[in-house]
Image (cartoon, rainbow, N blue to C red; front, side, top):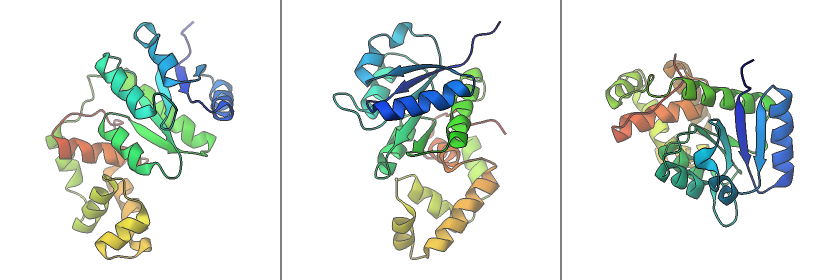
Length: 211
């Protein structure tokens, strides 16, 4: 009998750990709640492969530091970041460093499961579905100039209001551009669109969800 997919839930907030653990375990996943990034790193090298649901704000070792430690230790587990409402810029920074997506707390079960499933799809296709910078640029060519401007602003971590002010457009126009970006790139979330943008921008490879 195949083993269930394993999710490491790393968060110093007991209520958040319990909630995520309940939603994931009821959806058929194995889960391992962990109270801190430092505690995870103590056994991460020998850990069973899985997905890491990682909180950005934690004492002693925050999410970005855990991510950096994983990278330096050669631990290639996919990361889904959990963020608060004021941590979008940090979440984008985490994606630039390799996180697959982020969830803004509080989130619905459906969004959590979608993010986790995308992460496991990445794990299954690791080193086989890499997207090169040239391919990412071809994907982005379908966007209008305004849509590319909006995507570029999102890649800096800007929220809708700041994007609208910076580009001299309305909030509604920003929302329409975001919807068009998702539709034209054939992705399910802004996080996936950002991964394509980062691939084109950095000239590196990423592993987006296959079409």
